Amino acid sequence: MKTLIITSALFLSIFSSNSFAWNKIFDNTYGLNNLYFLNSDTGFVVGSQGAILKTINGGTTWTQQNSGTSQYLRGCYFINSNVGFAVGGNINSLILKTINGGATWDSVPTLSFPRLICVYFTDLNNGYCVGNSGTILKTTDGGNTWINNNYVTTSQLQSIVFINNNTGFICGSYGIILKTIDAGQNWAQITSGTTSNLNSIYFANSNIGYIGGTSKTFLKTTDGGNTWSVSILNIPYNSNITSVFFISPNIGYITSGEIYKTTDSGLSWRNCALPQELSYSATKIIFTNSNIGYAIGGPIIYKTNIGGGYSDYDSLFTNNINARFYSFGAKFWDMFANSKFEVPKGSKKTSLFVSELWVGGKDSLDSLHTIGGRYRSAGNDLVSGPIMNESSHKTDDELWNRLWRVSRNEIEFHVANWSAQGYVMPTNIAEWPGNGDTAKGQLAVIAPYFDYNNDGRYTPELGDYPNINGDEAIF
Image (cartoon, rainbow, N blue to C red; front, side, top):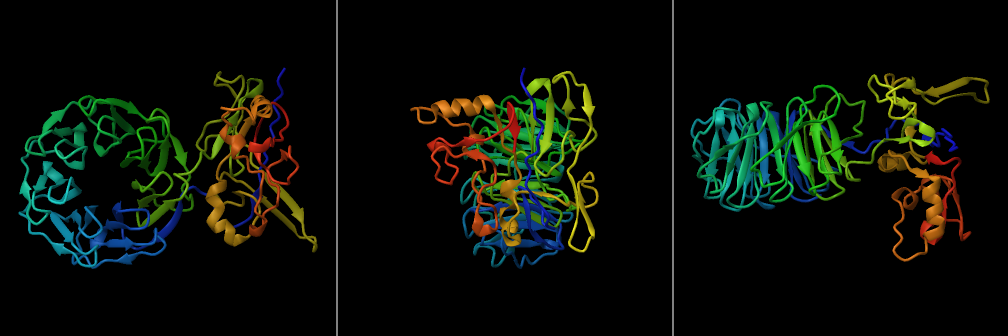
């Protein structure tokens, strides 16, 4: 009979900072609507009151650009480091253009078209804008002049993308999807299979594309946008998906207040931890590489350096039990109203609702001190990660917002095969946090391990392995 030992091996530190995969890097007085990054360092965000903010150091500092307007800006796009556009308008369309990297912006004359929401360029000359009342504008001279590219719908158009110079897609209200194969000369309506408002469209390659919409609606195509499958994502509440971004056909992100990540082409999604003390939620997201991403919500800009983060929960399954654990100390619930201590596993029968770590003690003056989780409704006494210098917490917290689950079978197979040609080490054994950084105030050894070569360092490639109790463990 297999043994299930439920042991929370959590190193929890008492700090006012929190441990999250995404961290707030900027807060301002403007409502932010969209963002565009040229690379990991240089990016722009636009928002209310004509706000255009720019960073050239990966979000460490932001400078406000002189947009010359107080109107609402909803979309932005840069062709290169110098030439970029911002679009919006309170009632009628507004297009701003810069040719010097955002130092100055000039308004481009347009007719009284409805306000604009999104802008996209396929090359230096050809660009498109979409917006209210079915508005589709096109330029062929680098954005100096724009013409109405034929009204084919009265729906509000939210997002536009091209997979090559000729083939592009637009999505909008009431489930509308439009496709062009002649650089916008003609647009044909594609059956979407939904009447939900569609807010964001993104293609990972010429065949695979994704759309997010209201009421958790998620669409996917694998044939270049000719047909779309519709699913309703299993995410909390009646969430509206406001943006979609994929860094590969398999790995992608959505915003719906929270940020969710998929690694299996949208089949399953997990929540990426946003700072819960912030009252503003994420509405737009972009990644510049597999690790660095930016998101906005309300007046706040967020950033991740670790690909949106790891899952902050995992489960033990041994001995016919399914028990969930979180990286910040909570156990056995789903952060909403459902128990996640299931026995027998798969039965949907539960016997425990929630458990949190509480610690109490007296100091040298006999004063009592306590820390503990209280449904995270009265602040957070505990954060994930080892005790370390407070300055290190500010930079390293997000690295510890995860769990490592290993089994006895994995360890035994590793012990027998670590030196064998072709052996692929399980991720959690390879990344087991055995080594602490004493320069940051951490212990030299954090997670317990067997030191096969007795060199004082966790080196699984040299035969070391996690030292656990029972048949399965989570650290």
